[in-house]
Length: 457
Ligand code: ATP
Ligand code: MG
Image (cartoon, rainbow, N blue to C red; front, top):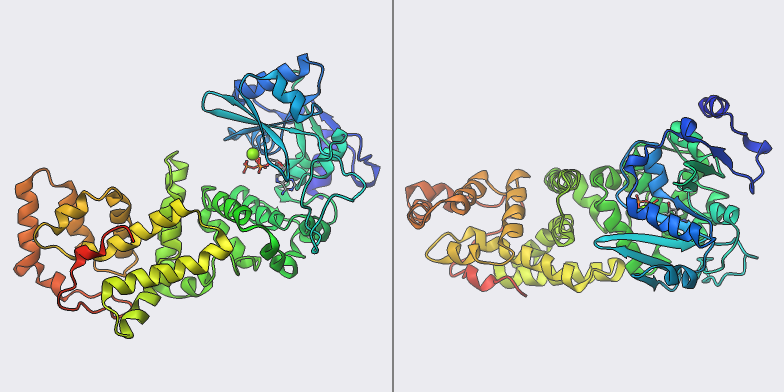
C-alpha cells in the first residue's frame, strides 16, 4: 500500500506494468540526491568512461546511501566497457578477481571499483553440485546487470552527468518504504550465492529495513548452504558484518534468521550465559562506537572477544585435568583457533593477534617486581589492556584489577608506578589477592610464573 502510494507520487510504473528492460528514470527533483556527497574521483571515472564512448554509472551501495542522504563510504562504478578497456583509460588501474573480474582504479588512497555489466546468460555459468555459481564473467546489457544484482535497493544506477537515477526494480520505492527485497526468486538467488543470505542480515541490521517475507522465508532452510562457500569469502563477509557499525544488531539478526550455526560456533551458548552475553555485547558495542567515530578496529581484537568465552571454558577444563594455568591457556587457545580456522579461514595475522591478546591476560594478574613494566612494553599492550577492561566490565573479573591497571598505565612517573605495585602487594592489595575470577573457578597455583605466558605462542 505504502509502496503503491510512493510509486504513484514518484510517477513510476508498478508491478506487472513493468518491462524489466526499461528502467524508471528519475530526475533530481524526484530522487533528491545531493551531488556534494559524491566522491570527485567517482565522477572522474564515470566522466572518463563516458568521454571514451562508454556507458558509466555510479551503482550499488553508493546510490542506496545517496538516496538516504548518507555519505557513501566507497563508490562502485558499472560500465559496458570490458575490464581491459577500462584498464587502458586510467593510469593506476588493476584487473583483479577470478570468480568475478573487476578493475580497481586508484586515486591516492581512494579506490573506485569498476565492474562491467554482467549478463544473465543462458544459465550455463559454471556451478558446483549445490548450484553455487563458480564464475560470473559473462558480460551483457545493463538491464541484465540490474537483474543479477542482489537487492532492489542495490540495483540502481546514477549518472553524475545527467543527475538521473535509473531504477530497474523499484529500488527507490523500496528505500522509501524501508524494505529489503531480493531480485528474482529468493531460493534460486541464495542457491547461486549463499553469501547473499549474510548480506540480507547485514543490510537489514545496518539500514534498519524490514526484510520482505519472500526474501526472508527460505533463509532458515537454506542456511546450511553457507557451508559450501569458500571459508575466505565467508570470513570477508563476517568481517563486513562485524565492522558495519551495527555489529550487535547483525549478530542478533544472524541468530534470528538461524544463520549463526557454524559461523561462530557456540556463540549461542555464550550469549545464553549472563556473563558471556554481557562480554560479547560490550565488545560489539565498543566496536560499533569506534566505527561510528571513524576509528579503526582490529579484527584480531574483535574475534578474540567473540571467542573468549570458549577459550575460558577450555582453559578451565585443561586446568581441571591437571595442566598448569599458562600451558592450559595456550592449549585452550590452540583448540579454539583450530576449530575456527576450518569455518572462518582466520588469517594467520589475525590469529596471531588473538593469541597475543589472550596470552597476555594472566600477566595482568601478576603485579609484582618488574612484571607490570614488562607487560607495559608489550607491542600489543593496548589491545590486551582494553580486553582486560572488557573482562572487568562484564563482571568476569573484579573492577579493582582494571582500575589498578588504568592507574598504572596512566601514571606520570616511575615513583607513582612503584607505589602502585607496592600497594597491590600490601594491605591495599589484599583484596586483589583474594580476588578470583567469578567464572570457571580458576585457581592460582604456586609458582605460576606469569611472565612465561609471554605474548607469542
Ligand atoms: P557496502 O555499503 O557494504 O559497500 P554495497 O551494496 O556497495 O554495500 P558491495 O559488496 O560493495 O556492497 O557490492 C556492490 C554491489 O554489487 C551491490 O550493491 C550489489 O548490487 C552487487 N553485489 C555485491 N555482492 C553481490 C552478490 N553476492 N550477489 C549479487 N549482487 C551483488
Ligand atoms: Mg560498496
